[in-house]
Amino acid sequence: MKTYPSIPAVEDAPDRLLAEGHLWLLEQVAGVPLRFRLTDAGYVEFGDRTRVYTDEDQIPAPYAVAVGHVRQRLDRSRLREALDAPGDAVFYGVATIDAGVAYDWAAMPPFLGVDVWSRPDESFRPLDAVEGIFDGIGLQAVNTVAREVRARDFHPETYQFPPSAWYDGPVAGVVLRNKRGDRATLSNRAVLPEAHEHTPTPSEESVGELAGELATSARFERVATDLERREEPVTVEEVHERVLAVVYREEATRLFDRVRVHDDERFRPRVDLSTFRGAVAERTRAFLAER
Image 1 (tube, one colour):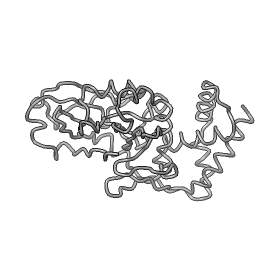
Image 2 (image 1 turned 60 degrees about the horizontal axis):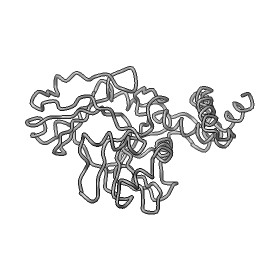
Image 3 (image 1 turned 60 degrees about the vertical axis):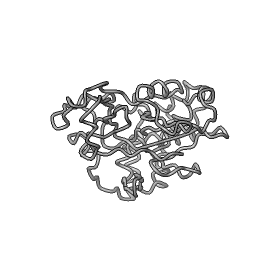
């Protein structure tokens, strides 16, 4: 599976990016890279920026909601119809995991697409085709902030960041793209530093209190209601696992340290996850008994 493309900061981008042609501006979503492809055997293979997860147990806990979303929403039949071989395309996007920006998690898709690579052409699909490709296979692409902006008229130092599509606040940045394949990020420093503020590591005794704070009644109800809507059984096991996945996604900065290893973001637990799981299990049983 082709490696996730790296995107430099705007000050490190090729000079031609802002010297000629036109730009598309996409919302930079604070999350982590996630790529996938449909294999010839018919299952979905996932990876982050450089690693491919060959085993289910390798997928980091905060990715669970995004991975489940892709598996559930991906229209495999349409994808097979569009390709000579299922593995001929690799899809790149962002797993929308808590990085310190207060997104509307219930409204924001767990995965947002940003790029599609085609093996037969050995190239990325055109910018103006990407949104339609993701829509065609049942997924959503990141939103486009502006199209066909004259490059010479774009000035990073005076750019006014627009509102985000996913919360009541400005975007975390914009990704600049042109039709030649050049790209760069212009981060909003007023937003992103908040994503890396340090919070104290909870003691073992307080993990139960943390579970009570994060595994809220509202999250339990959201999961239970979603299971009922899908006509799936609302069992302790099912609700427990889904609420855990939701908490790992939406509260990642409380539960994990993000550590950069080479070009990848790794999630290192800040609490004993076994103790945390047990505390959430107790709350699951109590919630369902009362419900």
